[in-house]
Image (cartoon, rainbow, N blue to C red):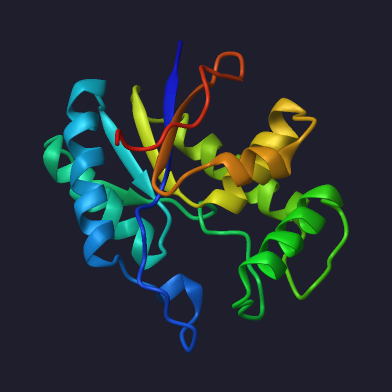
Amino acid sequence: MRPLYLLRHASPTLQPNAPQSEWTLSERGIAEAEQLAAMARGWGLRAVYTSAESKAKATALIIAEACGLNASVVDGLEELRFDEWIANSNQFSEAVRDILAEPDVAMRGAERASSAAARFAAAVGIIEQGPFPAAAVSHGRVMTAYLAETLRLPDPFGLWRAMPMPAWAVLDLDGPRLAGEFRGLPA
């Protein structure tokens, strides 16, 4: 088994006037990342990879430091891009649902889910060259697009909707298969 821990970053501070890629962790998010780091110490990680986006990098750095590792940025782990901010949570969920349901169609000013899945798969290909177990800190939409494509998931929107922030799951790259569901922090 080559376990890749897929982690959704901790909670950011919402900054509607800034691109989502520049959002930083909130105070709550820092505490969440520290909780994740405490759990990650028991995973035997040999490498930590991250998206270049601020909230993912901050989460990864906290985890890597706790494990005595460095966090390496890997291109392709970045979030599935939306060109515009959608403040209403119901409208945002509808947009995600539509994008995941039609992965080859560009809609609502967003990147195609199939394109996001392909670049995430290329990033996983880079990660596969390194040691295992490994962790990749990324984002909910892009991980969902990748898993939907790779594992032929029947309900990608259901996976995304059920994925807490932060969350983690183990992807066995030899399958490939998910070894369980995405889990959040203990209550």
